[in-house]
Image (cartoon, rainbow, N blue to C red; front, side, top):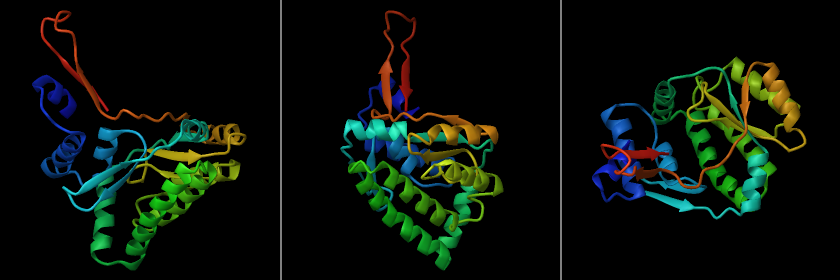
Length: 233
């Protein structure tokens, strides 16, 4: 939406400005609980290590991932719809309460997850795709410690069956609790993982990475009676 208005009104906004404005609209004006990573990931696209030090102190560090590594990661990746949706803000509320209360399990889990992000960056840049899957598995175990609502028996079964069929690791996207699961599998075990998850009623899709982030453009005014702005991200 912001991209469409930017093109229509010819606004001078950087990707940082767009991401921050999207964050303010969703988190402050609408009041949906959550972090800032989604807005920055959508605005910038590609692989990034993003540092958050406050609402206006965000640094997006683009990672130079070689094309063969990207192709290998795409080939070894799966996106799995668990068949359930959730209101992520409720899960995030419980995480925030636990962290602010100083719950040792929650605080420790977040510290480990932060450290694992750096390990994941190193594995990705070096092309250690299966090692990246192992890191995601460890991250997922810590993430489940931050809130009892992040997983459930259905999600645990899907993840466990995927691992038994050959997946190295993965995690639930977003806050968890439902939605999509991301998995990394060795290429020769991928068919078995897909077959098992499909048999359990899950929808499995391939993965392709986007490097452009948010894009906006104006339609040709000669072809329409009114000028239109379009944005995707």
